[in-house]
Image (cartoon, rainbow, N blue to C red):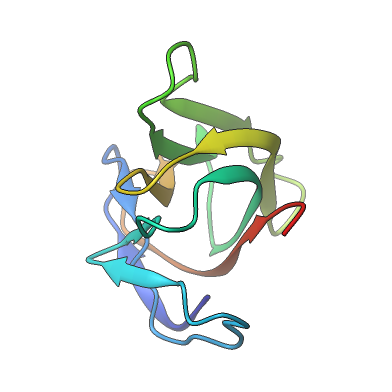
Amino acid sequence: LRRVAVQSVTSGALTAISWDTEDEDTHGFITVTGSSIVIPANCDGLYDITFAGFPAGTSGRNFIELAIVAAATGIPAHMKTQVDLTEDNGIATVCNVPLVGGDTVAGQYFQASGSSVNITGWITCYRKGV
């Protein structure tokens, strides 16, 4: 999934990215509800997930995160990666996450520049060993 059109992110607010383009869905399993990917009932398994965010004009504190709501015990709900202000993107990756039907995955962005900034990006969610 990609965010092609820029999305405005308010300073000081953690913002879920709304996906506007689906490039590939080999088995028709990707269902997006708002900004979250919902794992279908018949797609339990281990997943590799990557979220890359491309902010423009940032300063101050910046991070991107994968927000995962999973039935499995012990999985962190937020996996953050600091965005280096000398770079123009950030990437967060997690591998071998056990997900079951109804679990959700979202990409979120936080910035504290003092004004709104624009972001684009993409997210991949692959089920392994199928």
